[in-house]
Length: 340
Length: 223
Image (cartoon, rainbow over all chains, first blue to last red; front, side, top):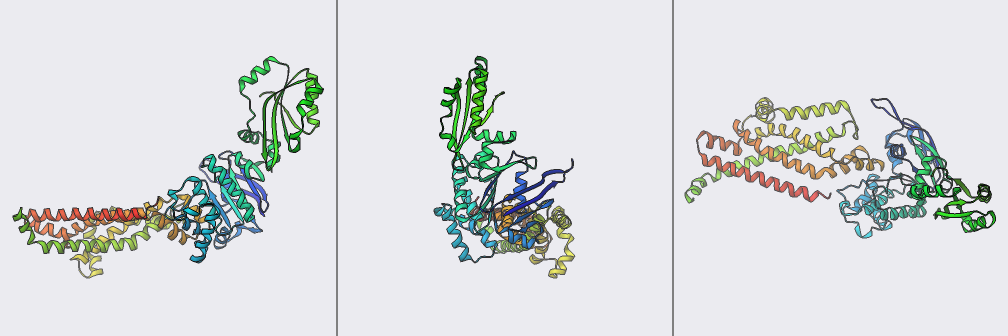
């Protein structure tokens, strides 16, 4: 288990101190994929780099399996780092080494014999699906392939924890998808804990179990990915989600609708088996309102269906309100959109 | 034309031994540049602030040594170190004596070239090795030097070529080599042809060194 307690990072600057991370607390369970999302400058990169002490915390502690990294001597820290793999946005492979020797590099540092480390490196290269490229140099590989090498390299010392610093941010959508699938697969196969930072909600949605939203050095929202998607609380989180599930209507349409008809526009989100229920037709039959579907989407988050509908409910104000109350009573999440 | 060749050919032995002397001086001082200049450069880089072993004082001293060494004109350095040269090789005349000032010039030169080459190594690559638990010495020998090897080899080539021209200057104070021949035969005895021949040999020498340097650097460059 990873336990981060009152972690603070202050950068000294000429204009005064800059608090990049403010008294941050976080626990990550074993075998979990934990995502940290935030806008650029929020401190997420500082945070993940402190987890293996590439960045030295100003105060606070980082406990990995009950070892406090901040108290280790430099020799012991080097040893502890061998059990923490890390992958990077720009891959950071050694250009002078072949794929095979890049993957074997952490083992070389750890002092593993040449025969053993080459054997292990070959297994890992097969695991990430680069079996035929072991003698290529990084410059001869595509971005996605380079990140596969990065992942194989990060796994060489059988780490307990894998840190991912924007690992898919410089990849095209296709490669991003395959790298995320690979990360999800190795988590299953190796029972690895993964902490990743990203600015893309898609990454969180695709592979994370839990997520923390970070803004100006503080966690402003935290929870299971499903809960966060179903009920985002802060404007920032809503903004991130809308990048993946876009329920913003074109302004022209909104204007048109508002001018012509009495009624309310509502966003209804529904989860799990509720996606199978015919709420809308019930609504129309029993509350004498007309429901105009402006937007509809069903997604799947962590294997659970998750739907969003934007309805334009037309009719008497009372009927409309009753129908909204009905939807709420059925356990759906209803939000009246005043200023779309 | 035949006449010209036959007139020059009587100096073949002289030219041959002059070339060998030049190559000997260049090779010897290049050896010291590698053995002392590269470590000087590595230490300078890694003690910079923000690098792997920051040390303000050591960096100030090393950087100072490089700058001072590089700012003294070679012709002055050569004369100034004569007492030191006598102490080391017992004489201030001849190729061995010339190797001393040549090395003293080549070491800081190579130091700066190495410093620049190593600074070019991407910080992210250094960090990734640190994240794997690499020690400072592993970072130097497994990351910094291998990653900057092509640039260091090109720097060595540059140093070698500077040494060819410096060694010609060493001829002026009795250092031997092609420079010595150019001055004694070409300048003092007005034998223009000898002068031209030494220039041609020097030009060819520089061309060959650059070609070889490029080839070796390319063979290590996988970027």
